[in-house]
Image (cartoon, rainbow, N blue to C red; front, top):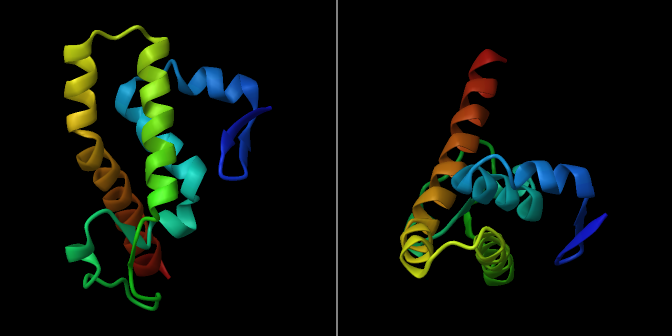
Length: 118
């Protein structure tokens, strides 16, 4: 087991597999590991997005800074391990919030799809 931080651990084999999947897939799946699907779906990155609610759910909250920075640090460690140059690191970090937002949007979309089927 590998300890990720914030009380979260993951199987070593799964962690190594996740690191082979690609930059943004690693980022999105790491966010899900740290925050869990159920909580991440009801989060946002910017305080201005808090007003967007999900039916039958509590109001959205901003992702906690501790979890946000943990995901960010794990992503930075991932980039260091892959020996990316500074330009590549800057490019990936500049899209960090966008990619995290895409993950939340995908989870919300799948939640809405599941509710529509019921």
